[in-house]
Image (cartoon, rainbow, N blue to C red; front, side, top):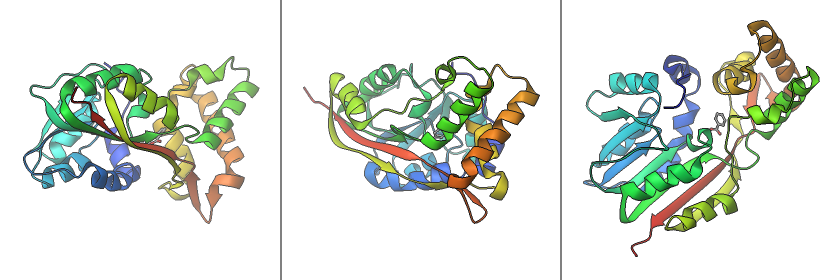
Length: 256
Ligand code: BEZ
């Protein structure tokens, strides 16, 4: 089981853009009534509920107990379960697996793709979006330079994220029996909620892995330094902007 460091209340309150942007990914999924669909890494369930509106039978899974508890209380009529993206099984073959803004948390991409492949019918589709190569590059760069300056050895090894290129990820999919029908990497600068506190909130919510060995006091000084370095490029008219880059893929499980 992955470590459950999520605060589902804060996530829903301050980071709603995660599923709001994800709604355009639903167009690529194009769910149909009667289909069996898995929402892999469903978080608090907003996109699972959108998929269900199509009449598809959908289940949402997430490795975080806290996210699943919130999803169940948001949508008691829907099916949610705690499960690990690297090691899950389904009761009957699926028409589609959908995943938004999650797979950059799972470095074992081969294990995820293997589970997705095993859970799909031949001809079933995998529709996913997550952070791609260069994602939040300005933020990662500032964190690494501040950590180096305070004497942290090999801070890059603390990076909790997997941001592949299109070529790398398409290769992994093809190796496991998928045909890649669509794959794209694009910039999606993202306005952070919370005004002047937006960047600190984002770092505290998502980038804690970089600071795991630090005391509370040092951690908070480092985050302030990082914020200071990012101000000239990422703070405009009272709003922080994160330099997101997304990878989107649609892949179909081969029938042979
Ligand atoms: C993303 O959605 O790209 C992302 C979110 C949190 C941390 C890193 C990346």
